Image (cartoon, rainbow, N blue to C red; front, side):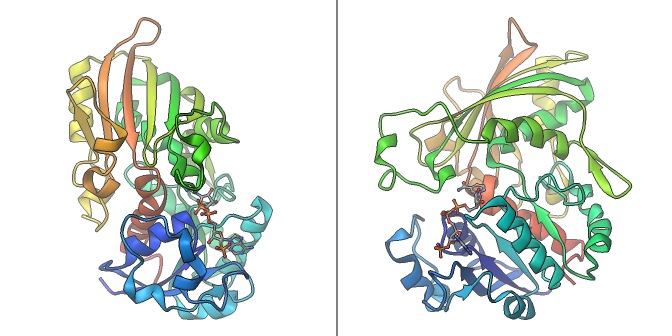
Length: 359
Ligand SMILES: NC(=O)c1ccc[n+]([C@@H]2O[C@H](COP(=O)([O-])OP(=O)(O)OC[C@H]3O[C@@H](n4cnc5c(N)ncnc54)[C@H](OP(=O)(O)O)[C@@H]3O)[C@@H](O)[C@H]2O)c1
C-alpha cells in the first residue's frame, strides 16, 4: 500500500490529539499538516496544546515542532499538501458544514468526526464493519460538488458504536423494537476529571442532542443507497436515554430488544462470535481481529477493565438474558474516543484508502 499524506484539522482538541497518537506510526498514513483555529495558527503543536494534552501517552515527538496552520484561512495550502484530512473541530454546525465542503471542493477528501454532515443524504455515515457499501454514494456526492477527488465521509456518533454493532448481526431475525440507555464517559465532552471536577461523584441525566442522534443515526447506517442518496431504514423503532457518568473513557449501553422472529440465546451468541466485516476480511491495520467480544462473567464488561480491548477498537458485550417486557436484554461497551471517534475515523480512512478513494 502506498503512503498517503494526511492533515488533522482540529489537531489541538481531544479527538485531534487521539488522531495524532494513532497516526504516529501508521503504516499507510503520514501526518504532514496540523491545523486548528486562528488562536493556535503559527504556534508549534506543543505550544498550541500547552497543558491541554489529555492523552495518557506523550505527544508524538515527530509532531511537537510542527507549525499549526489556520484551518479556515489556509484551506488551499493544506489541500495542496495532503491526500486527505481528518476533521474534528468544535465550531457551529453551519460553519463546520461549510468548512468541510470547502475542503472537498478544493479536492481534499475529508474524513469527519463532526456531526454536521451526518444527515446530508449523499454523505456516507459509515461503521466499516456494518455498512462499508455506503461509500459508493461518494460518486453521486462528487457529481453534486463538481469534484474529481474531493468528498466528505463521516463516522457516526460515539453513543451508537456499542449497541449498533451488537444488534447488526441479529438483523436477520427482524429487529422490531430497541430500547437503549447509554452511560457516557466525560471524554465524550472533550473533558477529563481535572477540567470537569463537578463530574466526580456525580451523574448528569442529559447530554444535548444525544438522544436524537442515538435514535436516528442507526437508521441511516442501516439504510440503503437509492439513486443519489442514502435512504434511512424504517425499522427498528428505537428509543434511548443518554446519561453522563463519572467515567473517564468508555460508553456503556444497557440494551433491550424485541424481534419479529425471536432467536435462541445460543443463536445470538454464535452470530456475535462469528461476526466478521470487510475490515476483518481486508485485514485493515486498525481493525480488531474479533469485533464483538462476549463476556460470560456477570460483572462484565466494565469500562475500566474492557474499554481498551483490541486497542480500543473492539466492542464488549455481556449479560445476555431474556427479559419480561422485551425478548432479550444485554449490556455493551465501546471506547468512545477510540472506536467511537478517532479510531473509527482512522478505520474508515483505511477502508476508503483500500478502495482507492484517495488516489
Ligand atoms: N470527544 C469525543 O469523544 C467525540 C466523539 C465523537 C465526535 N466528537 C466530535 O469531534 C469534534 C471535536 O471534539 P473534541 O472533543 O475534540 O473538541 P475539543 O477538544 O473542544 O477541540 C476542538 C478543536 O476545534 C478547534 N477549533 C475551534 N474553533 C475553531 C475554528 N474557528 N477554526 C478551526 N478550528 C477550530 C480547536 O482549535 P483551538 O485549540 O485552536 O481552539 C480544537 O482543535 C466535535 O464536533 C465533537 O462533536 C467528539
